[in-house]
Length: 320
Image (cartoon, rainbow, N blue to C red; front, side, top):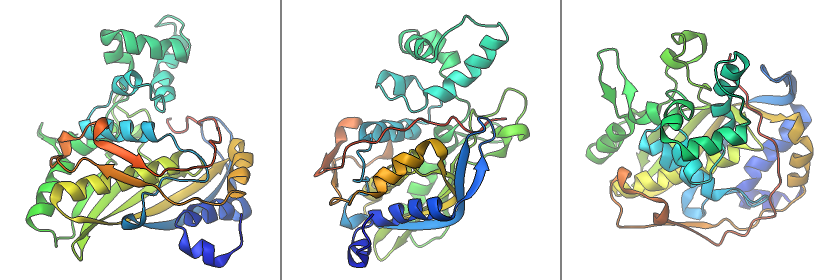
């Protein structure tokens, strides 16, 4: 990676690259709970992206932009079933859908299927998808349909949008995906999410007529996951800003446990050898003024000139 301090101060992608280097150099070696795979980890880092200066989609490797957009639209729909993603050939959640099926298969309760066969059946069979495409009450469910003790469903995001419109100076516009009732051993048997939320809480604030978003992410897969998270929450900020009638400000990303899995070490080193290109621009259909009104066709990414993609295996971490 370049050691030109002027270049590093100018291009926001170096914030991400410098954290990668920090983890390789200084990270504590740990083992992932389920797989036993080695990882290197640091705690507590922060990145800031001025959204007026370009859309922060990484350029040192090509990032699967279609998947980011479809996943965000899926979150916004409030769904917890991967069929929408599968139907749009987005497979970033496939492994977490397969894990419960695999356990049932090992108990002899269901026919033997590979992950690929399971996903194809989810795509083809609506009734099968209702059961085996379900991930439990993950992000979208918590954002849009948080279940209360008295039987109501709370749309956290709709509340935030309404309040930002009516009183933008308040400080409590927070959306949480961390609901202990559905996480790990705290959940009733069979009620847990397939994976505890990694990006657990985000906070909107208006300063100087601009909307900014701060995300706290407890668990940060720096090579595969975090590039998605940067782009996804930046895009969400742009969308909310348009809906409430403000200019976009910053996306501030607070990283808890920031780590690199050992099967990504070489890929990270390759990425660190590359120099960032100019950030692209995101164009959003200006006619859309409601958060539920966005569709895939309302977004256009312009000027994206990344380095070639760098492949890496997903580590299906988490769970019991």
